[in-house]
Structures are given as C-alpha cells and as structure tokens.
Image (cartoon, rainbow, N blue to C red; front, side, top):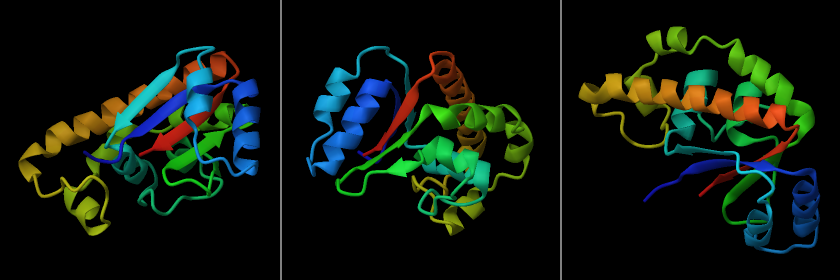
Amino acid sequence: MGLIANYKYLSDKNLNELKTLYTENTESITDIEENNNDLEILLDLDKMWDALHFALTGAGASEPIKNNCFSEAILGISHIEEVEDFIAYTEKSRIKDILLALDNFDIEKAMESFSMEECKKANIYPDIWDYEEESEEIEEEIMDYFQNMKDFYRKILEVNGNVLVTIC
C-alpha cells in the first residue's frame, strides 16, 4: 500500500463546511466527504502524483511551488495543517488559471527529457525508478494521468466548482 492522490469536486457549501470544520479543530474529514455528493467528479492519480508534479515542475511534491499552476494542480493551494493525512483545497477562482496552464503544457515534449535517473536522484515517489526496462510504460502512464487531470479540471471549471485534494 502507498500514498494515493485523489481529487474531488467540492461545492461551495462543502468548502465552507471544510473551512469551518478545521477552524474548530475537528480531526475528521469523513463528514465532508460523505456530504459532498452534489456531483461525482473524481480523479485518482494513484501513486503517480509526485512523478507528475516532477514532470510538470522539475521539483518533487515535497517542495510545493507557490503561485505555480502546475504545483497547485497536484497539491491544491490551501493546505489543512491540523490533520494526519494531506488535505488541501483549491477554490474556484483559481481553476481557470490552472486549466489554462495545463492546456498550454506540452507533456509529450516534457517526456522527451524525462529521466528515471533524475526521479531517483530527487527521491520522487513511488520508488520505481530502478526499473529502467519499464520506462516507456511509466512515461505513458504519466502522460495518461496528465490528460486525466486536464479533463478533471475542465469538468470542475464547467460546473464552477472547487477541488478537494487528499493524499493518503
């Protein structure tokens, strides 16, 4: 088992509940997730979230980059510090900029210089970078997840929603 990144549509009502929940020092997000069923817009990056962050930014996800749409797409903008798992959200006002950046990014060109060795040196999660014979499949997987992320943010923009990011 490992760290898996999930992204969900978050309504304005549930975003406000989330903010309230964590200002009151409550420790569970379960209620918010269970009540966030207005729309089912989901994205699962499985274990490749850090690798995708690295492909997009050149840095691992342990080093979030402020005001960088690519880093924000993967890690959200506002992080909730009082919890054990990684939980963050992105408000709808930022979604258009994130989608525009994703739409203008040439993932195929980025993958031309993608290096399994560089991922290993940067300690990118998951630790699969010694499997050089699988590099082509890993690169295809990263490109597929990138396309899925663009599609997800496009749907979020269409419904004027917010995004909940969990990595656990």
